[in-house]
Image 1 (tube, rainbow, N blue to C red):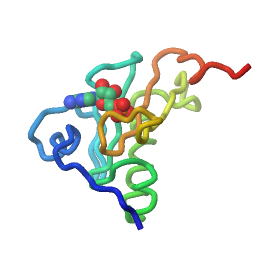
Image 2: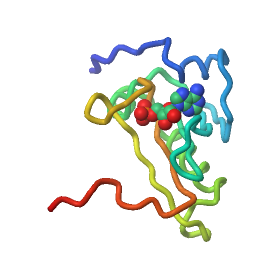
Image 3: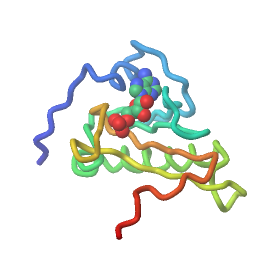
Length: 128
Ligand code: AMP
């Protein structure tokens, strides 16, 4: 069981409630994708589940199969609709999700970042 407490005042919860706008890319039954407000690449989109999940491990443990399938398919559709898929002539992308203190997660609602539009370089400096 999870011990996560979900903060209903976080910015993505407010977007989901329609209290603040977002630049929407895609919406499905259980997921929402929108452009990051401070893009770090030519393409930078966030995909979030509509359910109250703090991070990826919380989601994996507590979400229903329907939510997990919907979220995974939504990520795929975003990549496709943004023209990022390598098998469809796209340059590719990076997908990552920050969790907790080590991941320096700022918004405590699960989100994956999908970044692309240029070669992004290595994710972390190579270890010596
Ligand atoms: P993280 O550090 O993984 O929690 O990333 C949070 C991301 O949310 C950052 O890339 C922010 O630029 C982005 N962000 C914060 N507020 C908004 C907003 N209102 N609309 C879109 N993206 C946002």
